Amino acid sequence: MQSELRVPPRILLGPGPTIANPRVLKAMTTPMLGYLDNDFVKVMDETVDMLRQVYGTNNTLTFPISGTGTAGMEAALTNIIEPDDAVIVGINGYFGGRIADIAERCGAVVTSVNAEWGQIIEPEQIANACKKVTPKLVAVVHGETSTGILQPLEDIIEIAHDNGALFLADCVTSLGGQPVELDKRGIDIAYSCTQKCLAGPPGLSPISFSDQAVEVIQNRKSKIQSFYLNATLLAEYWMGDTRKYHHTLSMTLVYALHEALRIVIEEGESARYQRHERNARALIAGAKAIGLQPAAAENYRAPMLTTLRIPEGIDDVTVRKRLIQDYNIEIGGGLGIFAGKAWRIGLMGDAANEQNVLLVLNAIEKLLIELGYNVDSGTAVSAAATVYQN
Ligand SMILES: *Cc1c(COP(=O)(O)O)cnc(C)c1O
Image 1 (cartoon, rainbow, N blue to C red):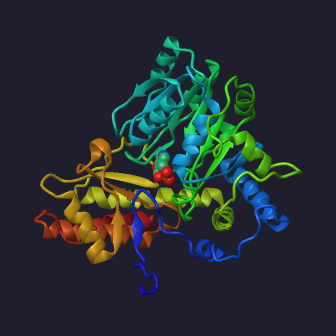
Image 2 (cartoon, rainbow, N blue to C red; image 1 turned 180 degrees about the horizontal axis):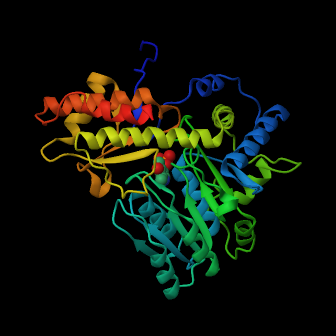
Image 3 (cartoon, rainbow, N blue to C red; image 1 turned 30 degrees about the horizontal axis):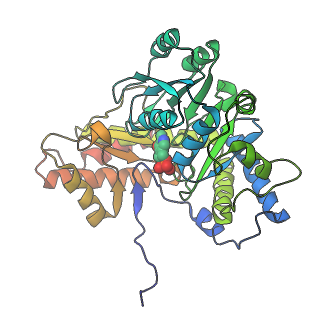
């Protein structure tokens, strides 16, 4: 017989999953209810209400998709896109590439607008693409977790709307960590996930469609290919007076999201966003003091995910293995062209705190010194501490 499940209490400072808040884990031990039990429907309604608040939207069609962030991405695209639709996708990292891939699988004719990894997509690039095609949809990633860029959205949204297109933002990493403000900005379609800045377990992908996006879905000529991710059918389960079974939700994950959203609202959104910013500033100050340069362009860095260039002569995998073995800390390696070249340090949700920043800086510095890197011990922590003193 196997022994009872036991895993180390890892300090998760990678690109997600992050450390789940203990209150969220506790909520997950709540008993199951039937999927149409009135008491469960009440939990669903409260969850949707809180989701609208954190997303900054009055969109009726707001609810969590069953599945991780990628399921939300797939749901967004499969509901909106019909074969031969023109779609413009900004690609400046791994996840922009994934949007383009899924859009093509939905039959879209995709125009990619590329920027270097670590740079933003410039609004003019989108404007130029709109001169060549008439897009139904313009899509970009808000927080590009592969590069650490927080994409400015306002100008691109205006261009998309001026050209009659819907605008989609991947808010997987930004929701709960930085303002997304769907209605204020005019974002038509957004999706996120539970395991990043909402500090929950992986498994749900909160999504929201504007009324314009809903109209596009309603006026489709072709049937939505997916049953499981079909927003029209899901709306009949999530909204309205008469609820219809669609698929069995994970009550456990809905309880988790309910508690995670309560925590975000309790902390206060602006306090939460400032906490993420302050801790990222301290992390970067400490990293720079020992010569680790951020890989994302200054002024456009996502506070929840910092990419740091790995110094010449230092082996990526050795450092990350030792961080786990000696310090119980997980950080992320680079994806795509950043593989072996950059580390990704996530400070998401609960994990964005002073204790973790000082711990990870001290650990990385000690390992670098052991590996022959020339820096005075204590440099990183002392630089970071200055940020907290101000
Ligand atoms: C993590 C992430 C995804 C994918 O989410 P999964 O939960 O891994 O499916 C998509 N987009 C961005 C920006 C992400 O950071």
